[in-house]
Image 1 (cartoon, rainbow, N blue to C red):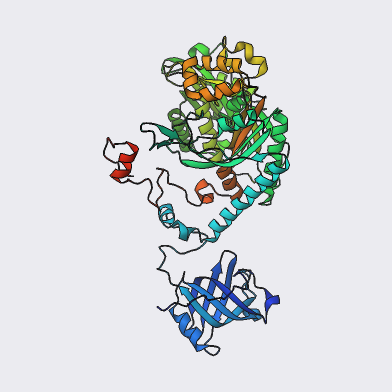
Image 2: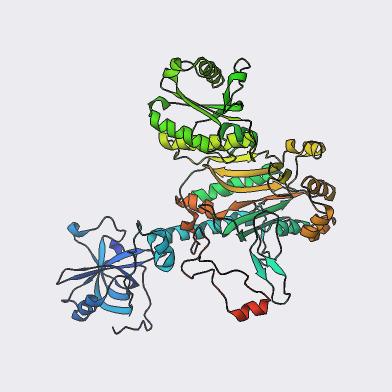
Length: 602
Ligand code: ASP
């Protein structure tokens, strides 16, 4: 088809702008054909841009050339329309459309470009597979929903910059081509052409650089920054993701928390959500006991309580011939109405999830239990503070017994209890409250004991400071040392995490020792940083917030891919530009590399 040229025509309005007040004006709109309706005599085109849609009337009585042209256009053709805005008659107003009170009588219709039939219709709600959407992401991005999501993200980045700028934070860029950072995931590596056999690592976060900026005297730093982690992707992770990375010198945790809380308040105001400040705080140990998770959703009850097994029944309370060691109980209000077959499945899931012992008991049915269970149940209801007025309730008991697993008993119990809680919440439909429950989880353990490797690992990263009052236990009882680390959780999602850092060389060296890193190894990995610590490092600390996740939660999306313009799939593939991809043998030669294995299908 013969295309028209735009020439010097200037758009007068966006497609979502026209209202009754514009009636009588001559306008020039430009955009994509959203829908074309051919009523024989009249052809209607809805023309769309990022602001909305306007109905265009192509009437041969006004211009037969326009009508002929309109006959040729199809959805997603790019057009320019000149015409007069007219108010629609009362019966033809479209209340669904912001511009629904008017339409434009076309006097000229320019077809600026054609389009192949798109593989899926461009509409807000779509049933198209995500694979197809990602393959044709540029078409997917035209959908109103994606437009809104990414524009919201733009707005939220602006809010971050304004808020942190006001608080004296400087936006400073740090390198992407660097060396291994301390987050402990796998690095993405970039081979060096000039130094064969040497590699840059892409940063898992700017952790060391932001600490160096504090040593460098910048006082307050932030950056909206890409981070790279080569992990086996869990459902909602991306190999590259964006953090709001923050660090400050001479920090007080409460000052940092307040800055972040007010940032959240401003961000959620963008989606008309009022955020209650100050945010609740909960110690890690309490979170693990009550919810089995260090990122609990506290917006609904269903809390666990630790049960002391009465000594009278302890010897008899066994599973697979092992005594039950740790026991937790939960009261499920109204849970008696859940079917036994569903509870049976729940019990199976609990076992698969790591529990060794599980019982679901409807309060009204307790009389039918064996005597040992009745005694145990009595203890549980007493600990749970149940009054006897709860015959419609259910009690769930969950335990772990001694075994030679690789994960500690208490960890296994926590994981299983978290899963059981979520399944029950889902079943009862209580897991989607309309409130936003922000929570600081604090007092994390400094170290995690790796049962497999038989050694301690840093729970956060090795530059996290222990609590001052725990310093003396560092060598004698590392497992009991708490860190000055904190996570920010929103409705069960971790949206940020950080810590007060170690600023003293002597403490840093002691922490490395506990981690089993010799001076030599520490110097090899982080030598430049350890050297910097020797030149007057101020106390400092910070946090990194998950920009993708926060935007997804603001937009009401469950996947971060919905707020990233060009995301990768769960297998780290970009379906649109088909990366990763092979490279020319010459490129490998230049880099001094040889592929040792056959390429695997992506
Ligand atoms: N660098 C840390 C992370 O990415 C965050 C922090 O400690 O500030 O998890």
